[in-house]
Length: 291
Image (cartoon, rainbow, N blue to C red; front, side, top):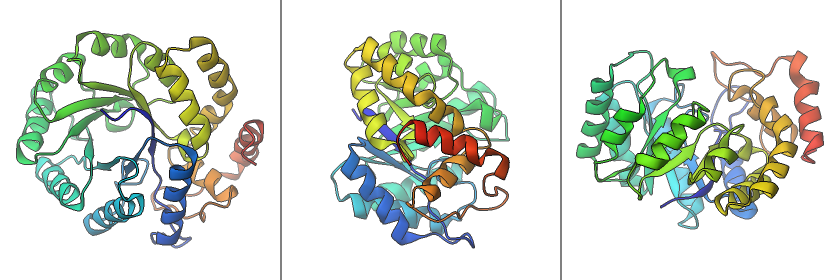
């Protein structure tokens, strides 16, 4: 089971929106150095919605090559077309990914049976560990716990990234899912509490800018050290909040540019962070010792 701090990696880009391969190598090396437990390549934070299929697969391959087996690489292969999700998942398996993360089909608004059949079809088509991803605030599609528990019975569906921030829902899943089914947070603000309830890790935006701190936070929470977990989380909360002053990944990419990790590139229809938020994000970074 993949556990701990799992970064939802950004895809570095030049000012013209081209993928910056050298910067991608640089941020992967940062995570290897700072204790990140696993990397998600081309998840939604990696701007999967605006990378074409070839770019999507090339970024996954580049990350896998750079990591070179030192930590697990989870490939983002979700799509709102089941056939496209199958194609991307096949490509990820061939590239050597350790697992795949599949966001719920966005815009389509499938019913719960449609979600079940979608994920079942991908799981049956590609023999690779697969992680469900529920983020209704971005997809307009909410996968309910009863559907998750049905899918958890499929052998190669091994976990879920639950990004609602709903701890009651997380507790329900932790208590009722098979013991080898991983429950990951996808919400930095509530992730420590989910892990203290028995969750297995955090697929994090904040880990892009504070990998060492998020690695330590996850270790404390998974070990059940509530006091130290909450103390560290309190220090990190301004940073978590600042990463969502505008739509993700706008703030985190701007912050990484400020840290000198990459340029300021982002793809339309997203644009760089509005100037009105610059000092707010800088202040949170200063408070955490990042700049």
